[in-house]
Length: 309
Length: 250
Image (cartoon, rainbow over all chains, first blue to last red; front, side):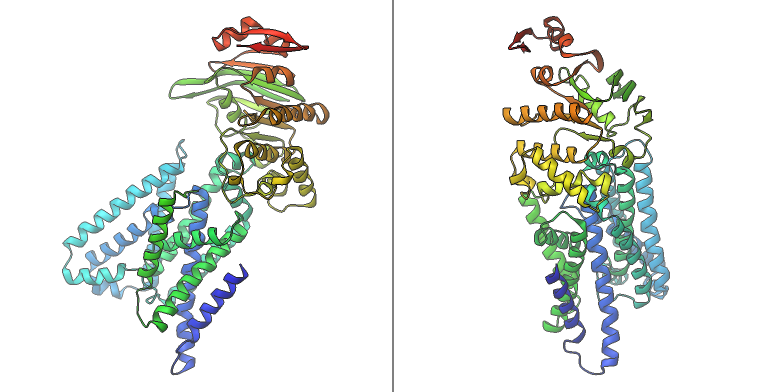
C-alpha cells in the first residue's frame, strides 16, 4: 500500500517535471490541470469498478456493462447528426457535461426504478437489461453514423475515442467535487461494503438492509461512471485492469484497503502511462488504446482462468 | 419466544409453506425434519428474512421480524443457510469477525475479539484461524461458518443442515455444543436435520414437516415411532431402543 502510494507520487512528479522546457510558470499549471484530470478519472473508474464488483460478486464485470458507454456514444452521435459538428463545437462544455451526466443518471434511474420498483429484485436481471439497452443504443448510434456526412463522421469518431488530452479544465472543479462527495459517502460505508461482499443472505443475516444498500451503491457507481465518461469518453477495461491488479497485490477483502489501493493503481497506470508515452516515447493520445489493450488481455485471462469470484 | 403464525409461501402457484403455525418457547434445541421438498429450508429462510412470506408472520417476543429494523434483529437472531459460497480472500478469522458486525458495525472492540476467539476455539479452528477459506476442506469451512454464527452471540440461532460435510466427530461435537448452549446459556435453537437419529439424541423437540405443512410437533419420544416415520418418509422405518436411546433403522 505504501509502495503504491510512493509509486503514484513518483509518477505524478515525473509527469510534472520530465522534459519541461521553457517557462515553468506556464508548464506547471498546464500540466497540473492535466494531472488533476487523470487522477480524477483514475479514482472514479477504480472506485466505481471495485464497488460494482463487490455488489455483483463478480470479478469480470465492469459498470460499463450497463450501457453507459453506448449511451455516451449515442448522445455524441445524435448531437453531431442533429446539429452538425460546427454547432456542437460551439456548445458551452460545462452545459454539455452537465447534460451528459444528467442523461446518464436519468437512464440509470429509469433502469433501477423499473427493476427495483417491482417485486422481482434481481441484480442479474438489471445487468441483462443494461446490456440489452447498451446494444440498442449502439445500434441506433451505428445507424446514425451510417447516415451521417463522411466529413462529420471523422469529427465524431475523434470525439468518441477516450482522450486524456482534451480534458476541459473548466469541468474539473465540478467533477472533482462530485467524485469527492461520492467517495466520502463510500468511505463511511466501508464496513457495509465488506458485509455486502459476503453475499445477499449473509448480509441480511448480519442485519444489513441489503436491497436498499445495493440500490444506493449502484446509484453512486452510476454517478462516478457518468462523470468519468463525460470527462474523457468511454473506457471499458481500465477499471477491470486496476481492480484485478488490486485484488492480486492486496490479498484482503477489506474495502478500506481495496478501494484506495485500486485508486492508486489506476493513478499509476494513467499518470505513469501518460508520462511514459508522451515524454519518453513521445507518442500522443494512444494511452487509452494501450490501457484498453492491456485491460482486454487481463479480461481474457480471467475468463480463461474462470476466476469470477 | 418465537411465534410463527399461519405462514404461507408459494412459488408459481405451488405452495411451499401452507399455513405453518409454531410456537418455540425460549431455550432448547428444536429439530425440523421431513422429506426433501417439505418446506424446511423455506421456513428457515422466511424466519431469517431472506424470503418474504406471502401471508402470515414470524414474531420474536412480539416483534414482527419482517418489519423490525434489520440491524436490531441481527443482534437477537442469527441464521446460517446451506451452500455458503465464501469469497476467496477471507481468512477464518475474518469470517468469524463478521459475526460481530451487528454489534460493532465494523469497529471491532476488545470484547468483540473475545467473542471471536471463543467461537473459533469452540469449533476447534484455532490452528486454521489464519487460513484462507478456499484453502479449507468442506467440513472445516462449514465449521468456520458455524463459528461466525456463534460469534454473533444471539438469543436465537437458526441453522439449515449444519452437519453437511461434517465427519462423525465434528457432527457430534456441534450437536453437543448446541445442546449445551441451549441448556447453559438459555439459547433458542432451531436446526434443520436430515439425520433423525441425531435429532432424537440431541434435541428437546422435533418438528415434522411434510408438503409445506407442519404435521407433528413434540418431544423425540412422541415423534420416534414406526408408524409416523414410515408414513412421513414413505419408507419402512422401525424404531428401536439401543443403550437407552431411540434409534430409527431404515
